[in-house]
Image (cartoon, one colour):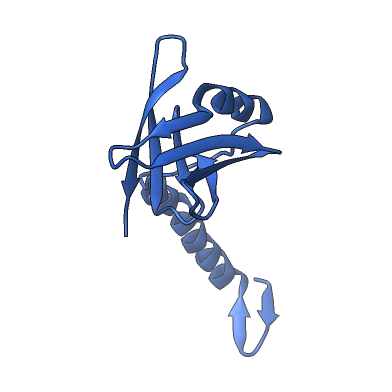
Amino acid sequence: MIAFRALGSFTLSTALVATAAAVVIVVTTPAHAASAPLAVHAAPSALQLRQLAADVQGSYTLADGRTLRVWREASAMRAQIDDDAVLMLAADGPARLRTADGRTTLSFRTAPDGRAYAVSVALSR
């Protein structure tokens, strides 16, 4: 039998038992990890952003009479209600934009050709 010394007596058979236990742990734990949901968020491509901008940019009259303007500037979408601060927007699905802080979502109703004709603004806390 081959014996190794490291901070005490340690034999090859002890090392094999420890290795086998580690292999069993490694083999059994991925089954639990695989059942956890995985969320993947991908930024829209430049082409998708251009298409989204083409479909939703414009001016919309909100239910309270204020005007929402939506436009694309460089590689980002922007919105402004009347003379309030300009909001930076990110795509949040087809015909849907949200503010960077996630507190405001713009959901557009689209015609069969993809062009938006109405918008709903949802605020969250």
